[in-house]
Image (tube, rainbow, N blue to C red; front, side, top):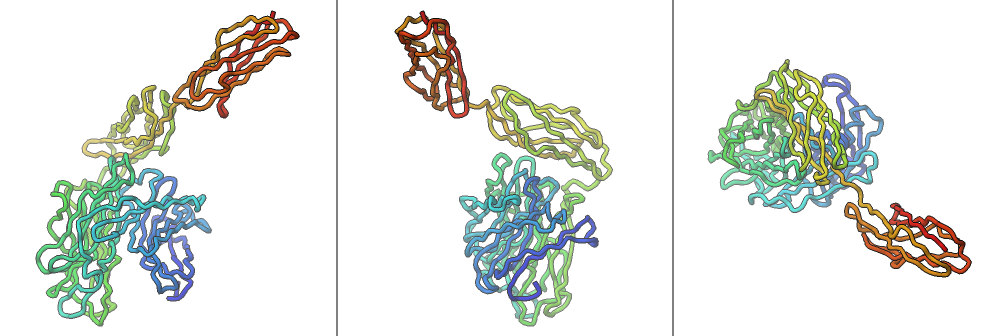
Length: 551
């Protein structure tokens, strides 16, 4: 902070309102003698572990590369202006170039979903880590490497990861940064799957192109990503395309912005895209945001590796792209260009609604019911009627809504009723609201539990008559319930004086029978006695009674 020498810090400003010209909360997080270089940030707003995610390339004493830093900052505390919000960081030794997942769209990740971090690990694989921060108990935070790595089509790093991008009118070449993924790792939640899109620069036969990926994970297996599609955008026109940024709108359209340059053109800003109906792995026609007037000179090779493509939250369709260009030949005269575009098939802005549900999770004993509150919020003057439905219910379960429709805005109670046949487990329920051509969904978790393992105890016959001295027996039976498999030991109380009892066997596992032998002596008192036989397994105790008549 203010120096290229230690100590090093990450400074973060969080807006206190929706007005970016207003006040900010200011934070500083210490990295001490380790330089936290090349920071990249993402927003991860889950209900129980809301975080700002960040990645760094770490250098001991500002010089020696030690690995990648994967961090999470307590977003809820920072939004509230907490004095000392918690930060949680892990180091991936000697492995850098990671990006943090960054949410697009109004639907958050499922509650409890860990943040995702990605890099390309080899020239044919992507690696993903998950970080589940625990800001209340940082030592309980968990970083996990997803295995196996995701296999992708073999590629070569653009310029071997170094400098080879030509420009018009100069021999000065530009950096490719082909040795790492390019910002952002854009995340979007759909009703039935999670999606991640990301890109990096690769070498082609004659130039450099942009390799892009769409990764998907089903809602039923959160975080189990696979490569849904991939492609390299590199038209055969002699132009180098590199340092891209990818994002996805709410209709599933993917856009890809990037820099473009060659010996015949100055560095330009262009983009392309695809719709879900296009052939897998392909992009459409290229468009230009600005054809740069100048090239970079003066021995300066650094270029716009902080380029970013983002989605406008007002309609969740408009892409905004920020990148750099030069207004004239020179060095250190970069200018930022911000342009926007959208796909014609993405639903237009205007009257719309969003849907949410709480609580995020409910636990119910099978055969019983539980409820959630579903809320419809209008936007853009929406006044329609929203019809509610639910899917993803387990076997033997049903859902009902009261009311079943909501006009303009309001809440409905969703009652989920399970039955004796509903299997215990954790289920993701998809709640959908439909109004004409508009459809939005949200998810909640249903945890179904079964009755706890237990046992019952009985004894026969109910009465025995015995002389003195003499012996008699009872049969004690343990019946397991709900999969009980524990050991049950026996004891008895209520015996008359000068009388003993024994069990054979002294205990049974799961279920079975034991013989209780009661022995009297010559001086055992005569009379009728109620004996209480107890079966004990851990904290579970059950009993039954029999009668002993001594004559």
